[in-house]
Length: 315
Image 1 (tube, helix red, strand yellow):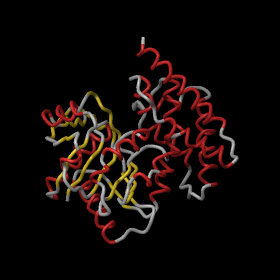
Image 2 (cartoon, one colour):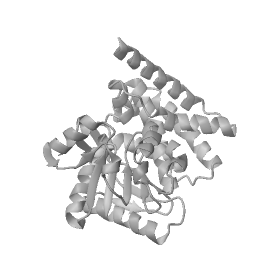
Image 3 (cartoon, helix red, strand yellow):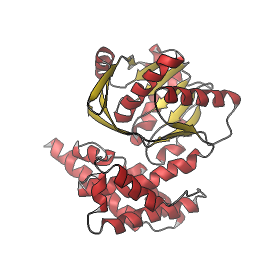
């Protein structure tokens, strides 16, 4: 089988390392696709550096910027940011056929409605609590182990089930704890609740995850943001598992020293995924008549930070 990984960012570099390790056991093939031709050439020449603790391992990879040169692929692992999904699907459109499985691995929920950009390919979805920090181009630090869920939003055909099982097997062979689930939608929302309660608050307060548990007044804001997202989920008929607010606090504790991806984006002057996370909650609230004042406030605050960094870069 031929796996194609799109997007060599933090998650993409982490998964390319994991999959490369898995392929040594399964014998399958991996290619990376990057819209940036210069970076594609660099990564092909230098490989992906995977860091766990102080130990570094370099994995050789083949990276292309021209999808037409790659031939047919069986599974696409889409690791780009939520706001780059449409452009990335357009880039790899020549490779998408009715036998291709595209695994969306984005934060938030905006990617759930992107099926119309797949042509005849099939959409699958994944969500992971693995922690990854991109230290520099092609150098990723595995910041924390978690669990990865994979699944489809419909009953899979025999071929789709086979591709999903193969993806699961490669991930597992590479060292991930991975589960194929029949209710991946609930898992995606479960992660959304946590992202809603952590990411924007850490970005606006410029703090690590664990500090959210100690800064006065933050707990009330976290509870409110997660509570609003839960109301939206229930209005959408989504099964809410366990206690999302408690789960968010547990993640803060377990990842106390982590810098959230949204805070990393703000610090590096990059666009954040606020629209796919808190913004998606606000949008669904507007369409369903459910008020989401805390999430709306967080969106405004993060957008202001994005504007400030963009203006600073221009200067």
